[in-house]
Image (cartoon, rainbow, N blue to C red; front, side):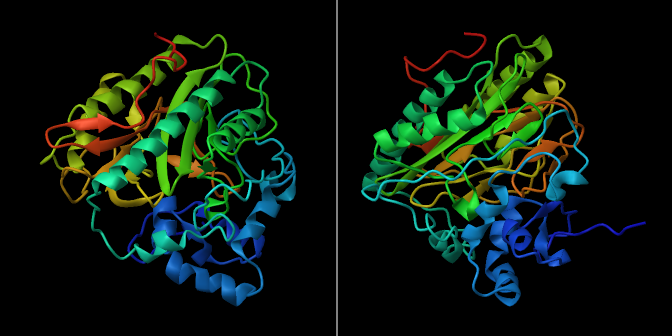
Length: 381
């Protein structure tokens, strides 16, 4: 019997299925290449990257993209992988370019968010100045408009690669950089998560099918600040069970948002989310969490979405963070495809998610990524 592979983060002992994409590209076969989640991967990056230097000092994290270009089902990297559901990866097209005149985050070329890495040892939650709040608010407004453009492109027969191009074009038209692009080597401008994909799905040439559900996760970098949100939408004629799941994810998020105000513990949001999800017969993903966001894409605090979590800290005015519960029809457990990004349900059942970027105000909360009167309708609207 094979022993389980444990997370390489020294502070974690969970089972690990996510493999560092740079290690894959450099053909580093080591148990130190595996992590239980993107959170642990980012946390351990300072120590882990030494493994890459040892393997090949001349290659950078950008080479991860080469592994993803023109991937087809049946190639050796996926040939022995046991899928949990019906979805299969398609062909991933070349990474799109961003004009020189658009301001870019520090990772746009190397793939490594240096500014985030420098903050890894600090759990301090930043209190934003009025100027910084204006910057995040503007970025969130752009992110909302960009997401809406992507949602309008959803339809039977439309590929997620086409949606990626729509999102990318909308970012450029708003003078914004698509934040996911080359973040730790991610090859696309948006995450498109279909059916059993929980999060971090990579756009490809698979056409959306009648009955699918799809989540678009959009983040933009605009004038030095990030804005982040996502929504799950139906494709054509969708069964009632999937519709119920989408509404459950939406209601879970908004129940948590209703609790946001100064003095509330971060851990409380998970209790609220879990109650709503379980009342609908659903479970909450535990691997991924909400996060602080401003000049950095991901930073303190971490916001778990499940009950009885151990998150430390309390809401204070002028903090900005996301809440983004991932709700599953079946088990909360997840596994990751060999691409190092695509997280799917362990039982192959569907998952749905919604996300907003939130500002804690003096007495309550402001949804910075709130829907606009022109935003495309959700299935029940």
